[in-house]
Image (cartoon, rainbow over all chains, first blue to last red):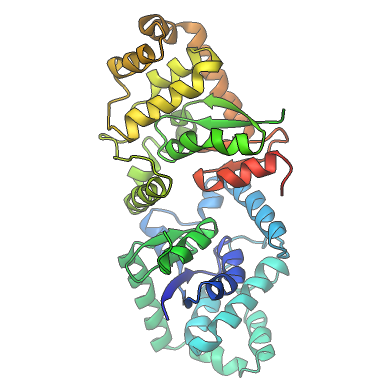
Length: 198
Length: 198
């Protein structure tokens, strides 16, 4: 089965609707999605940003929140802006990396839902533990593994891989040929491309 | 007839496919398009940018050129990147402002075509004169008017109006209620919104 890589960070606003919608859209196209959690922070630092561009450029931030609200309304997704924004996503991303890849999509959707639909603090261990427990996983074991050197090193490799691919934002779809599609707005187009519909 | 405001700058890459496609899409929706040429330069200066963000952030620039190439291929638009990029759009924007609004769309499409399909230097008087002459207009009269104080002042007012509306990039659709839709990717969505399809 053809596959497409889905790069996302829990700190990324537009990754929320993309994560909630991508599997159904991929199924319609008989396409496998490889979920690749990573950190935008180091990538943004390369661009000279030490904060979300939506905070650095408030006029773009206002637009983004309204746009995201419209997108969520359109696709029936609950939405409330996280406070503070961005949430520190480090622990959640590490936990996603630590998990069996088969459980990663479910965990990731649950984190996005907690963050953007329920306004829960995803930087906190307790929020993540609750999600993991609800998934019948051993929460403290996963969170302990998330803090180990091998997981940190795998995540670092993923950030380096993202850089090499030219991933400068999220969500980003990357096809086998290395075509990039940035943003929730490009979700359908990127998935179409991955299955040869141009 | 309901109308939507279409804000664009000739220096803006994604404004090219938007300008070429918007009238047909608006017609399908029985929607009037108000063409509002303006300058991104002063708006970008507000954000601290003295150049195109695609030059300031090369990794985003590379993505944008490839994305634009794909968009043009998809919609059957000829495409070659202007060199240098961005082109200085001041004279062309002033000429668009000076023109009878009824001729503005035709002139604007011709400028975009010269710039992004033919690789012509749109900062040069001769390029614009040729376009105006082909439109059966008195080229030197239009270009002289473009340099007058009233036209400069009208353009300045338009840039101020853009700022007040929260226009931070181009192309931007602004509906009567003040909803903003940024980018070629949002063209259909913005036009749908303007006619009440949400």
